Image (tube, rainbow, N blue to C red; front, side, top):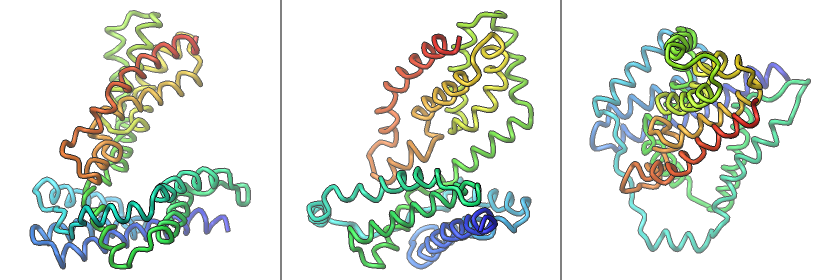
Length: 311
């Protein structure tokens, strides 16, 4: 059972994601008016990586990602044309479904949280398994609540995936980039640069630079997890923890301070760009503008809390 949950079950859920991407590629090939071949190839390649990624050599996967990048920057990945839903139809469905529409979305988070406490043979479930099961349960609930036709489900799933586009891959790619930066010793380089500017033993300056470093590097990387290892090794340990800061408090507040940077950057595509694409807002910066005041306020709060709680 442990082997199944660790090695086989995650691949099943990755394969399901891959099938959705392959369906998007097939739809693009059949119905796209512009860039049909590039769009179809892009989504087929994404599907292949999800389904066969465990067995494809890393060099080939890297080559596939390069091809996908070329397709994206050359404008060969397009959304395509989908049926417009009238305002009257939207209002009718809204009155029918009401607030039940939020139940599937809430279920994903709650189910994943509950399953994080599940242990089988003393082993925790893989993250992909937890989220995958939660999404399947949520999908069943959505079907029961909305009662869509099969073709409607396929069409709207493909539409949302194409609206998100290449941004759906940014979290994985940026996470990998953070690992590369750590292995390349970027943290040591940053530490050397900061040590020539920051006065030795100045706790206040150390905390401010660490928090701002987490925010700025998260904005660059688009991922606080990717920034955490680099900035904590380069700034957090030598300039905050080495001055007597509690490592647990410093690490926890450093990570959440990085999330303030997540609120301010388009690189955090899954938070700030995907919603604007799905909601079809007029301005792609709408989400970031709404979040910016709270982000700046929370940066100050994190600096104050770290000074009060870590020392």
